[in-house]
Length: 61
Ligand SMILES: [Zn+2]
Image (tube, rainbow, N blue to C red; front, side, top):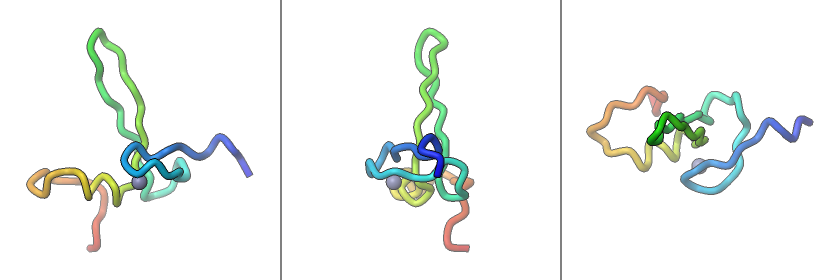
């Protein structure tokens, strides 16, 4: 088991497996050219993003 393959979901605080289909990387552009990488379950991301915003992660379809 590779301990480095998990990251914390930035919305629910639980760990997910990096590389799994429903655990997504979010790259946030910060001032001065910095970036921060966050991770989120697809389900958590769909829950917090406003319904009017189109989301690429597959839903129930
Ligand atoms: Zn989550």
